[in-house]
Image 1 (cartoon, rainbow, N blue to C red):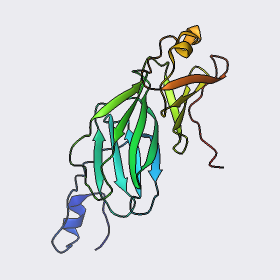
Image 2 (image 1 turned 180 degrees about the horizontal axis):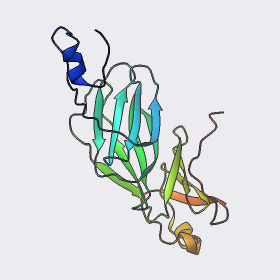
Image 3 (image 1 turned 180 degrees about the vertical axis):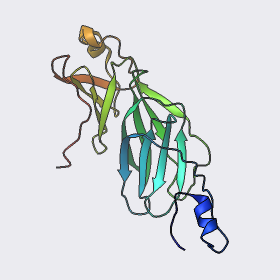
Length: 205
């Protein structure tokens, strides 16, 4: 007798030769991936993703079964994007992520491609005081981050230069809560507060 039977005793009565598997217990941990981004550069090939089930940001190898933890206690990640900086021929890569519940965008400096991540990496808050930040898109060449807020607004933040004091004083009243000490930031799109902006992308051309 092969296959399955609804009654274990029926299998015994039928003279089924041993061994008989009476029960199999399976423990599973489900994931709730929300935001993700891919590094497809040669020699890197990682998938970065957030798991809402355990509040963790992971990266998974596209070439093996390796999974590494980058950050914990991040329960409301809505956007992930990579920023690649070419400096003296050596590329530096950081991962930016938005936390909707904290109203912030943070950055994680990633190690060289050949280095494994064995413990969560330190994160630096680059923007705070935001209203439900969500989607992120990066123009690495110009060092401009574009991000959306759930309230129907799109901003650009320039990482190559801080905002002059004059521009800070001329900031729109609705944006007065934004804290961006080393970033020049301005709002470029405003829609109705009923508009839900979850994602954004940059045209590579």
